[in-house]
Image (cartoon, rainbow, N blue to C red; front, side, top):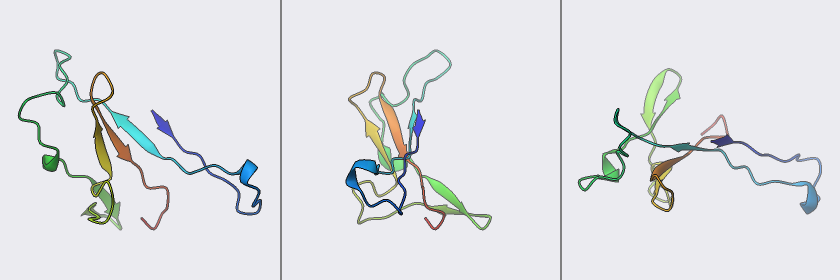
Length: 92
């Protein structure tokens, strides 16, 4: 699922504004349909997310963020999934 919501800066009314939410939910399964995120030796630190900056792959890492690598593992879903927080600003 991918969703992107925004608001107009010209209209400061709190009733006409939306929070920007750009996320992508990812399910990882093998050829037999087994969830690859639901294994005993799974380690989220092995995942790396990169963005393209002027043709260069730059790893996303912000230690001050609640999600320093721009993703989290959602264990509340069945099957378990990764939520990837997309950049909604060209400067990010």
